[in-house]
Image (cartoon, rainbow, N blue to C red; front, side):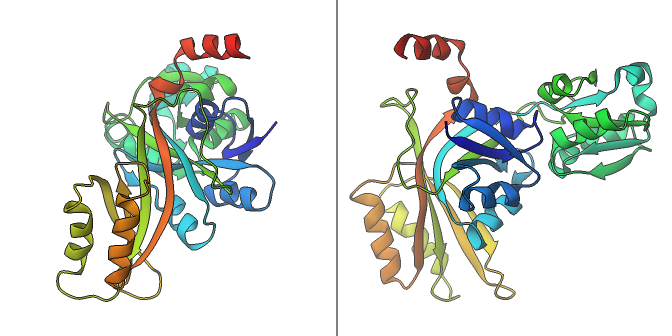
Amino acid sequence: MEKVGYLGPKGSFTEAAAKALVPKDERVPFRSIPDTMDAVKEGLVNKAVVPMENAIEGSVNITLDYFIHHQRMNMSAEIVAPIEQHLLVPPSRISSWDQVETVYSHPHAIAQCHHFLRKYLPDAEISYVNSTAAAAKHIQENESENAAAIANDIAAEAYGLEIAQKKINDYENNRTRFLLLTNSDASFENKVITPSTDYKTTMMITLSSDYSGALHQVLSAFAWRKINLSKIESRPTKTGLGNYFFIIDVAMKKDDILVPAVCEELKALGCGVQVLGSYPCFSWEELTDPKLEVVEEETT
C-alpha cells in the first residue's frame, strides 16, 4: 500500500481531500505543509496532498513558495472541496461558548470567519496554529482552558468536541483547491477520469527583462492560439525587490502542439518557461459520490 502525506493532525480538510483523491492510500499526517512536502522527497511517503488556493483568502503562499524554491515535484491531480467552518468546544462548554477567552485555528480559517468573531467573540484572543485539526486537538488536550477551535465536523468527531455554532465562515461559496504532488511524472490514474474530465496545465514563467509590454507579449502567445488561462499570479523570485515570476494555469491538458508551441515562442522571447504539471481536476462531488464506492467494489 502506498502512503500519502497531508497537513495534520487527523480530521483536517487536507486529510479529507487526500481520502477523496487517493482513497486506497495510507494517510500519514505531518505538522506543517513544508514537512508534508519534504516527506515525499525523503521517501517517508509516496505523495502529498497540500492546499493551494482558497476562494476567500486566495493562494496559500507557503505551499506555492516552498514548492517553487525548495521542493519541486509534479502536480498530479486537483480537487476543489467546499469548506465549512464550525466553532468547536468541549461538551462542558456548549452552553457558554460565547464566553470563551481564546479561539484557536489556522490563519486562513480565522480570516474566513472574521465577521462572526467580530460580532460574537470580539474580546476573545486569537491564537494561530498549523491547521484547523491541530486547533481541535489542542482543545481536546486542554479542556480546562476556556477556549474554542474553528474547524470542521470531521475534527469535531475525531476529538470528541461539540459544534457550538455551525457554518460560521463569512461566505457560503468558500472552497479550497488541493493538489496531489508526486515525485513521478506518471499520469494520475482514477476510474473517475472520463473524456469530459477537465484538465489544467500549470506553468512558471520568468521574463527576460523588465520592459514595457513584456507581460503583454507573454499573454499574447496564449491569446492568439485561443488558449484560455484560468489563473495568472505573480510571486517574488526572492532575489531582490521588483523581481517576480508568473504562475499561469492553462485550462487544457498538455498536448503535442499548442502548449509546446507556446513554450518555444516564450523561450524565443528570452523568457524562462517550466511546466510544473498537467493534471485532471475534480470537484468534491465527483470523488465523494457514494455510487463510486459501489462501482469500485464491483470491479475489484
